[in-house]
Structures are given as C-alpha cells and as structure tokens.
Image (tube, rainbow, N blue to C red):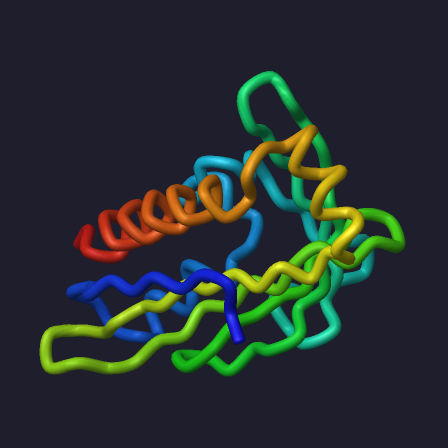
Length: 150
C-alpha cells in the first residue's frame, strides 16, 4: 500500500497523460525535485525493465538515483522503482482512469527504504513524507496544465 497518493481530474485522455508521464526525460518539467532523467544506454524508452538515472535537487542538496520501469500499461498505469546504489528507495506509480471529461490521474509514492536508512536520510534530506506530499501536488498540477494545452 502506498504511503502517499493524490489524484487530480484532467481534461485530457488517459492515453495523453500516460504519454506525458512515461516520457521520463520530461519529468523535470513536472516535478519540483527531479531536475532531469536520462535513459540508460541501450534502453528503448518506457517499457518494463527499462533503466534510467534521475537527477534531483532539494534546496542546495543535489543527488542522483537509479530507476527501473516495473509497469507500463498505456492509458492505465506506469510505475518505477527507485534505488540509490544498492539501497531501495521508493516505488512511484501513476494510474489513469477515464472520466466523462477526460481522466483522473493518481500519483503514489511507497517508501522502500530500510528503517535504519529512513532515520539517516531524514537528517540529510528532511521529512520525505512532507516533501513528497507537496511534490506530488505540484507535479499533478503541472501535468494537468501541460495536458490541457491544445
């Protein structure tokens, strides 16, 4: 079960939203923390098993993570695991449900860090739940704005 989940109604199709979210190199346009993403060498885009590197920033802190796409169902669900070296960090998922006026997008975050690492990381990065709650809301608002253009 996700530690956080937020939803937003968007006046665009689930397929359009899926296309935006699954284009991970564009994640820096939506996320207030992820500044850019690059697919790993030899990766063919947003398919299950695809690997990528995410570059992140909170205030003056900068770091990178490694990711792997674990679900890629166009128009329905897109999810990826994040880890930092050998340490599991999180599962991020986006779900899309058609509505009469477009779709509802739900972004969720599941903390996968070992308990001892949560304490260490909190000292460096702050309260992840609070930061991610704000980040999810900003990301969804930016996705909505981008999707409803045209």
